[in-house]
Image (cartoon, rainbow, N blue to C red):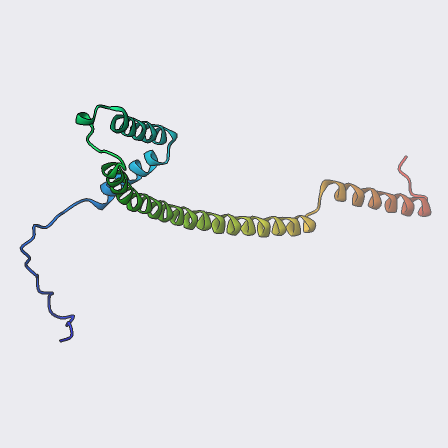
Length: 164
């Protein structure tokens, strides 16, 4: 039977308790764990732990050893740690990928705005240059007045009409 969009979905009742958690806080926790797992401090702690474990179970009296050779319980503990570390690291990487994608989109939008602003300013500058070419500058007026004065002086010299 096909689900109908005009009717609400039937709530399924289960016998298991419903686990409600905040995915954001779980994601932050997984990032903190993944960040710690990627440090030299973690490697030193883990190496020290393994050396102490192997040393105790190799050198301690036989009745005090809790994990005799070939260290089956140590292998189990390290496998369990790895089985939890891998998904936490992947979750942290996915969250980082999401953040990188959002940052990329924001950078791209900012670049588009910058390009649009630059194009607008370039058009405005071009418009101002065109307008300034049509405006009479002080030097242009001075040269025009000097030319006009020369023409007047030439006309007066030709007619002999100089003021005394």
